[in-house]
Amino acid sequence: MRLRICRLWAVSALFVSVMAAGPSAIVRAQDSATSIDLGSPAIQTMRKDYYAYDSALPLNPKLTLLDETRYAVRYHLTYESAHDKIVTAIIALPKRFSPPYPASVLVHGSGGDKDTSYIRMSSEMLTQGGIATISIDAEYHGERKRADRKESLAFDSYMLRDAWIQTVIDLRRAVDYLQSRDDIDGNRIGYLGFSMGGMLGATLGGVEPRIKCFLLAVPGGGLVNIVQHLPEMLAKSPMLRDYVPNIQVTPRMVAMVKDVASVIDPIYFVGGIQPRPLLILVAKSDEIIPVEASNMLIAAAHAREPEQVRRLPGGHASSLIPAVGLIRQFMTTNLGTAKLRPDAASAP
Image (cartoon, rainbow, N blue to C red; front, top):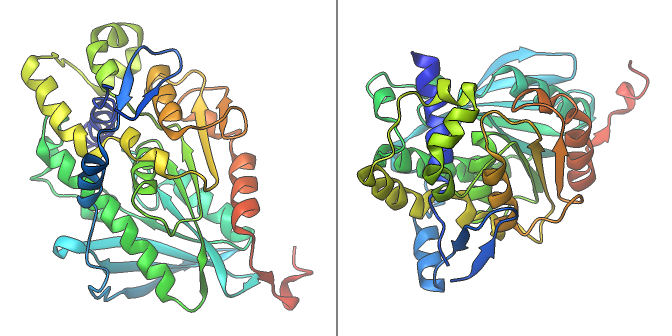
């Protein structure tokens, strides 16, 4: 049951993310007749205001040694965010390099947390190359789970909207924390997000200017088109049926999702990433994120193929295996690396 609810969070996030289609600063998605209306400048400003916070709030960070790997020393971290939230995180510092380190924020998908397998492997890969990492638990994930909130994380719920906004603010606070450390180069911070984490990163990119580059792996966006075609999608994808069982598209649900999506849909924000470096990874046989959703996000990001978009063989998870080299290259190219310590130069 717990896994199904976590998965529902992501699919609801996906549904919420397509519900934002219509026609003002219009972007037309490839292979889709759906247009994206970004709204007037006043509406766009109001939308971004949901993610504003008081950066003068104390972080009150608390660090505890977690473990030590071959390439990194890892610490369990908590820090304070807006709305009296305590964020749980892991920060990993490279062992073979001298500070200051560039750093990357890592964000998990719907069924994961700050130390899930692909997050840990990404951290190990980056710290091996001299890049520090910080990974956080999204709201209601990992150590932040709440039994009384799981059943409410449906896509027709304002709780999803609030959890999404809170997590984006928490990520902005992670940047505050990184920039508060003397051993981190605060001008070289990147972002790497998977699935739901990729969608959160697309939203974050429109409101957080301090992050230098963004890699969004298997994300989606633009949900109106998807909800309208949900019955056909469920018929085509047995795995998607496992994620969203027995869902009936009703006028009430559509109205609620449109309302929620109006302030969290990644397609309203992802265009703000450019001209910063951006790479979007798409799975050619994705069982969870429909191609229309990927294309909607790509169009909203004004991303060029193949320079900023790579379509990888495999499904939602399996496509990430050949992506390892792309992730390493993208981050080291755009963030650089720390200086190798003299005593580590000859180490294996």
